[in-house]
Length: 316
Image (cartoon, rainbow, N blue to C red; front, top):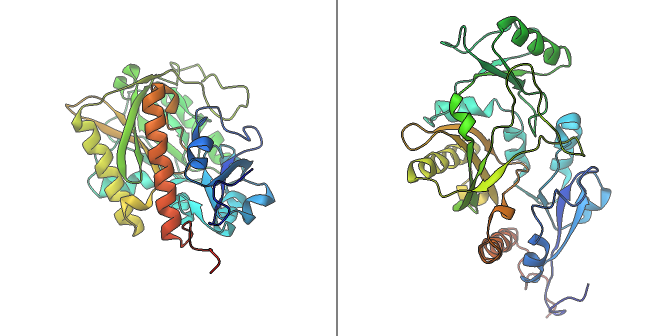
């Protein structure tokens, strides 16, 4: 690659995918060019490629096989020179028990019960006789997530996950999910854009349909313009997460807050800080270019904080 300014420092940036998706799922198309326009030197690599350890900055984007190799993945995050989002954020957010931290901080959250291996199956209070969702506490792309109306079947699925060494998350099924979730995207701690995700889990007895890579369940996505009440939940989730981790929301390069419901009683379903799809393809071309430029500027600001600005390595 010919550098735009040979006399200034051009940080080497890696967008981290995985072996099944070494350049992501296509949603991030355009990010490489947006970063290059800021004088950065980006390329895609699977997260476990040894060359990632030589990069000046690694940005997690599609490391969707980490759930199968969690210990190895977390050890790698600690070896990377500079990672966004940071390794401590990743370690906290890969386990959905973070939902308890957010609920304790006052964020309106879907009720959750966690059952570790060896513990007896339990339902969230008030859901006896109702429909529940059972899924791994460490999981991505809806792998291992199923809906149940039969408590015995739910307990059996939980036992199978526990047998595999996984902690289980049990939540009441919120019928509002049939209208989809609202995904709120933040860049550098500021609201960027939003999109909706159609329901992924089929009725009890069915299983999600996965893409060819097998790393995530297929989704129906569409642009969205959420009410401010939903954005309030998003901002509250980011603020609570940052306070818990001892950072500021601006230290998070990206975040996606998945919310159920409308303005009357929205609830947080998930806060995604590790490698979420950001819904770029749901934006028109002009808006996408502007939003990805903001993303590139946030990367540039992070590099400045790391002491890797354009003139940081300039010869006298």
